[in-house]
Image 1 (cartoon, one colour):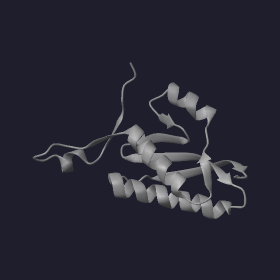
Image 2 (cartoon, rainbow, N blue to C red; image 1 turned 60 degrees about the vertical axis):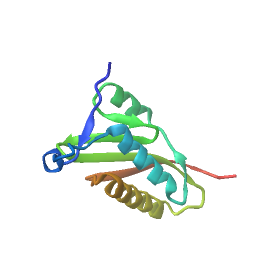
Image 3 (cartoon, rainbow, N blue to C red; image 1 turned 90 degrees about the vertical axis):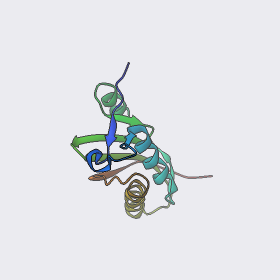
Image 4 (cartoon, rainbow, N blue to C red; image 1 turned 60 degrees about the horizontal axis):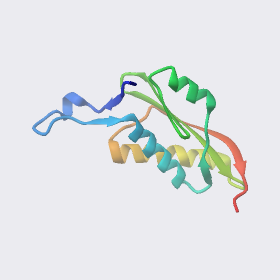
Length: 127
């Protein structure tokens, strides 16, 4: 059985009468994915075979289009694989995804990732 890894949010500071807070990494990946899809110009999330294999053989998490890695304690690196809509300015799209993901994680989970990387894998014409 695979061990579940949780993101600890200042456990010592938040420990009080009600306990402490732990957030499953799949929740972080879901927040990042949904925030990326909110940005105009993102057609869908992509995929990375390399990161799927890397996640299988390590403690890292890969969930459809989102790769989460912990470099050091409290240093979170998120890599998003996206498919862009044809005609979208790719630089603005990547900046928008980075800002939206960072903002959503700060707002919902009080997590500030050290890096939010965006890999545009493909450009598709939407129907």
